[in-house]
Length: 322
Image 1 (cartoon, rainbow, N blue to C red):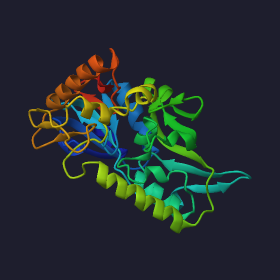
Image 2 (cartoon, rainbow, N blue to C red; image 1 turned 90 degrees about the vertical axis):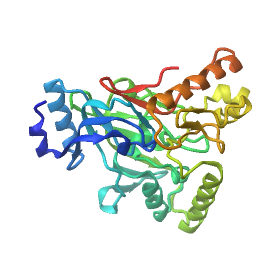
Image 3 (tube, rainbow, N blue to C red; image 1 turned 180 degrees about the vertical axis):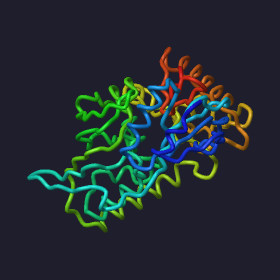
Image 4 (cartoon, helix red, strand yellow; image 1 turned 120 degrees about the vertical axis):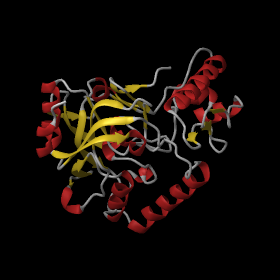
């Protein structure tokens, strides 16, 4: 695979253990990774890979990803999560809102929430405990406390599959509950985001206290020390209304503590699957399948969709089938 010319756009590495790139700490060998020197290099990397017909995928924090036991036969564009510096973006006030322009996709979510707190912005306080990058969270329109980051996104700056640059409004992207339809369907890469906030010029201390309350709640509710990828299943609004959140349904079905190999449904929270030490991707996929089978029987042939994505050996990042 002739990819040496990519070295001018980023740091190339070969034969990387996949388990080092995912919070689940699972996965086989990745043929190549490249860590871009700057965001502007990402479209150029994509163009080269497209022209050469080399399979590629993009990983940021890896907090919402299951990597195949076979690894990946191609190139992973690796965006290392970074803290946001004040000189990396611009704050612009309008009559009714505050815009934050050019937030890089690899910005670390808790760091962004903290930066906003210092500027008196409270809109994204719900994200303060979410491990991952802004790009990854926006890709799935994620959030917490039944809120979504998309509520404050004005525009996406993206690269398409061939490396062409596009600017898309949030409305164009068809944002829904835990989905970003246009960007996901067309395999676009988020480079940066423009945000619009409506709760600003607030006392930083009040926002900080709310953050501390959220973090304390997360520590009580979620398993933190054993490798996992957070919530496995999306909390579908219609199913939530009728049956409750996925974690409660899993608990009601008596599945907490169920193990396949070294993967286990958390005893602490039913919507978490833990790697108890040496778990395989196939172990985790088997548990997901078992849960879905139980969902189907209990919910009348319906299931909760998975939040987590799967890095397939040759197909790249795909949905986990129901």
